[in-house]
Image (cartoon, rainbow, N blue to C red):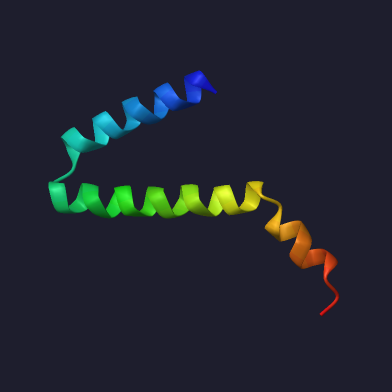
Length: 54
């Protein structure tokens, strides 16, 4: 888990140097939405939706 967090930090640092501020903001927003979706998935919401017949 520590290595994944470290790689994410390195990836963000590299992108911040390569992209313009507006472009980096779009990428950062997409990353936040992706992490939020992953958080919802980790809560088991997908399994609850599958188990509900209606």
